[in-house]
Length: 248
Image (cartoon, rainbow, N blue to C red):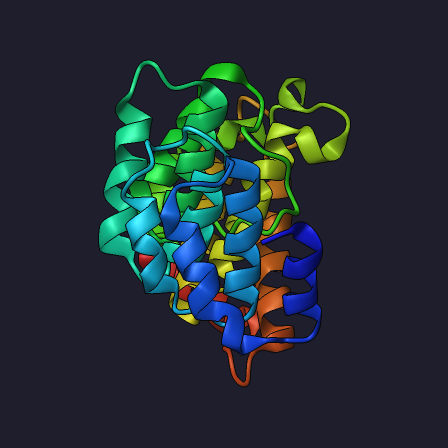
């Protein structure tokens, strides 16, 4: 099936082509680039994602971009088949940092704390974010308590201005703050956990960074305000502060 024919199927929404596409995808007779193109169109035409498992199981984790594309398609409907391979990538010494970061990002987005742990460890070791901020990777889909426990090892990078850099989207502090912002946005319970985290660390780093540790309180109040703008009901700032006092 030529590229022009594939594009025609997509543009005309020829759903009848789905079975034919699947047969060709699973035939193993096409180049990786052609197979990837067919997979993309198959998915856009609404083909059953689970039926792509036949091809997925033949691939070596992170051997090429086709594997990554299939992970994006299959990770939601077929986590039991996808997640173990991604976990192996993190433990494979032969894999590149780039591949491990990609696997960790998928894992964290799927709610696996091992993924976020790897990303934060990378940040801690290299003093730079593994990925840019403001991406579509929702790595905060993990348990907030576990995430905050891990972030506790790098939160100092926010008040420590020696860790900041340009451009901002590659700066460690912005990476950490984006994760915290998104964690706080998930629910009232998550918001309170994040606010307590901010306040606790503002006190912890007050002596080390007297001019900037107080910024953590501002980020706390900003998280509250952002949540209140989009929620049907939340306690007002005074109520939240009263709750936070009782947490200690």
